[in-house]
Length: 336
Image (cartoon, rainbow, N blue to C red; front, side, top):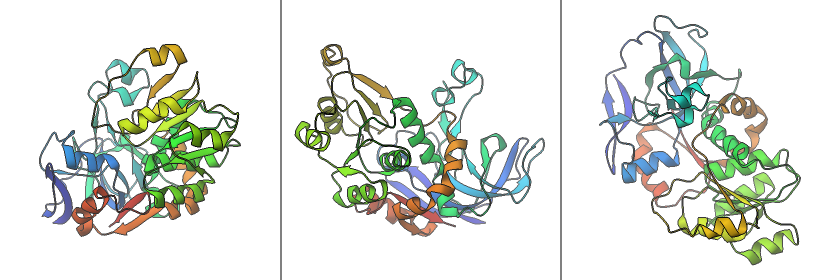
């Protein structure tokens, strides 16, 4: 038997004692979980049930684990390998999958949703989802590979250059990681905005960013006569998105990576008259290996961005704390 945090329904997550996973079938492996991160989408699913397709389901798609058993027909892995997982379960056959755009798979599902995830002592997953990590990498750092890939995908979709100022709305995990990645190569100002002042100050300190409000005057004060042509919406707030549409200059682009709960009326003339571009960013494409490669060099900063390290038993109360906005850091890590 083992312990697992399982989502039953909206606002209902429980830590249960459950049977160990079965022997891995062909192409799958058994994993002993070392650490897992709580994602904003985990909280969204808990609150709104957007992706509850089976109940109960062991949550968790951001995690690091050790391979303990190989199913038939698995190559490239051996028992003892430490791995992180690609969170996406794809069909491999649709047009998007065949054209190297798995994040747009017609049957896209996620680990922790369509199959049991990493909020458990053990799990089984397809070997094709697993990526080895560098030797000696600390478990809580490795557990952040997946959201780092999402941030990297956002930067690449936005096509922001090293000399282009950028405004990031939202200093949660993805917004903070976008700022952190850019801080290593960016020569232009990195601006950040967040209603949580403590989090904004943390990201600004770690990434060398400047805190602003989402107003034209605040952005102009930070940049002077330099136009703002790139922005990231990482809050899922309609109000923040609308503010960004007025904060960016004509010809600018806004990358949307937050999860929205409301709809809005958009005047298409805004796009026509000011030639604005809105760029959707769904998970990541092929950035996970590159994100894993960044982890060793980003370890000191990522360590500073961890909010708390918790046990599996603390997951339900931690969900409530995070939803209430009481996080001081960016990422809560479950240590197993």
